[in-house]
Length: 225
Image (cartoon, rainbow, N blue to C red; front, side):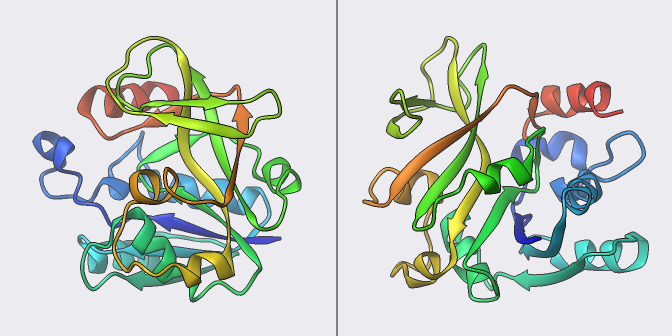
């Protein structure tokens, strides 16, 4: 049993042409919002409590969850007073986490990760990052690891070709996240590349989907039946 934070506060600007103002996590995937799928996947994998970190259209997401979502695990909401970036949002959410660590994931991606196995691989006082290999890293940037899976380097977006990428799924130490001095920052750009904390990969061979652009949203309709 564990706690999870879903980051679902983004504006979804790259999907504006098809969202009509609807927040990305509520985008329909074959008759069901992606966010509902993420919650059900967590519940099926023994999550006991989910914290939704919200900002854009927060009231709309809260109302949909409260009126339409049937879930046995506890769901709580945190609304960012202003956009805080992925790092700032997780720092804010960590204040409400009751465990020594928590699982974090993005509300606009779906990764076929065995969360229980990932948690079993976690060592306290480090960050575990869910990763997968893709045919082209251009959109995501590339992660370089050593032979034990520890992360050596993050390469910037733009380099094409196959490689290992960040799935946007993490296990984070709660007290460490709460202690970070900055209020607003990117976990990926301002924290991972500058911190001294140990970063290790957890590699999955399953499919990773990011609905951040229209072509991937349409692909998700085919993949997530």
